[in-house]
Length: 269
Image 1: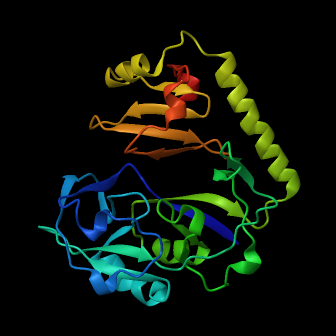
Image 2: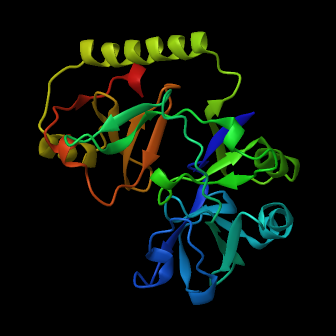
């Protein structure tokens, strides 16, 4: 059994929310919203190639009417499908209400704050015994506002109907042995070491940010920042599988403001 984090490809249509006071802009932590929901208008920011799963806000999957027709019978026990308004498309936001307590805390790599409390996961391991075999979509309470996880069942339905726009990146594989896990960690540390050894001139964050605005890709340890083809700012974090998880941050973590940055070379792109 494999688990995937629900991510969009860069080729997905991008939407823009118009009313930031609407419930759509609130935290989706797994609580039911149907009783207070009224459709709100979203508009197309960038049309791009695919509109099956338009991108709006991290942790809030958007689907069009064709996808809803197919998926609804599979995921209805795990989500709310809430209508949106759009000038051209029939769109819905998926509110995942299936929140599972399924993290294996003994095997996961955990980041902690200075007071010892949980700050995030460097590597998350799931306890598959706590994930029902018929699960399609779920969240965990620790990251419920920003992450949605899906299973092979969900991936199979999407691929069978040739829906486009999702990037199924494996976040955990039940057949991933300790030996493979150790090798992945070794390669991850090797990649970080290579970044450190091959860095050129270093810049403070503000100077690095100016270079990003000039089209440069800047890197600091596991973090990378760049602009896309539309000039939007993206912040990426290097994952254990050596891919980058990209986000459009609403704020920059203060720790990154204190880091030294350098221009990413071709091998790091």
